[in-house]
Image (cartoon, rainbow, N blue to C red; front, side):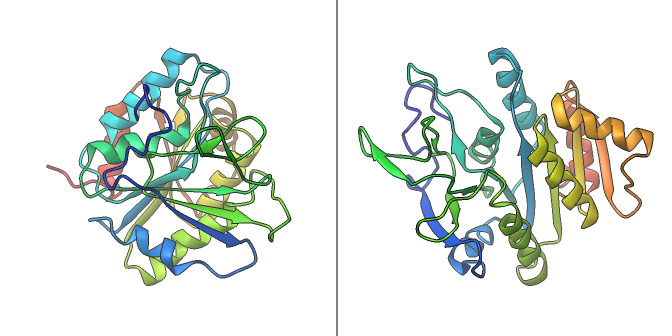
Length: 258
């Protein structure tokens, strides 16, 4: 993540592969194959948001995940967006976590998905802009899958959920991926959908306590019995303890013990 040049392509290949698909179509093999380039056949989806967090909180979030994932060599992915401030600096988000992790772990592949909510535009210095707020594709990723509703339609911000869940199942069933999971930090209503879908599939689902908003709300629902995780695999870990998150990732087979 280059804070001085937030629009420069920072991944090791120096380019981002963009794949566009219709939400009603089958999964694009070209994008699915990007995941199989990871040294370890494992995949972690990071979901959530950063609403209500200070700049310091966001920096600590990136450091937290960087420390917890040392040695991870699988697919790490999230939404494929990046936000910048009015003066052109990066406003760190959950979607910046995969790029940070991949940059520190050779063999790890950072990917992203996003729905096309508006018509895509090229602006200023030929930057691809996704919406009226100036959201752009995250240049720290190796590949981004853009999901659209036909050439002229649009989707809500949850329009890529079904696709990315199908992709993870595809990696499991046909790509030899032994472990798939989801980590939730903060987030809103869409994040809760993702947590529930992950639990229903029996995937490793890690909720970061103290990260705020929906993630903490879901933790309370689990503790009270409002959400039944009988068939799921839920872990709760504090945002202040990156070592505990790392241990969970080791125990669940995502990182090898050294």
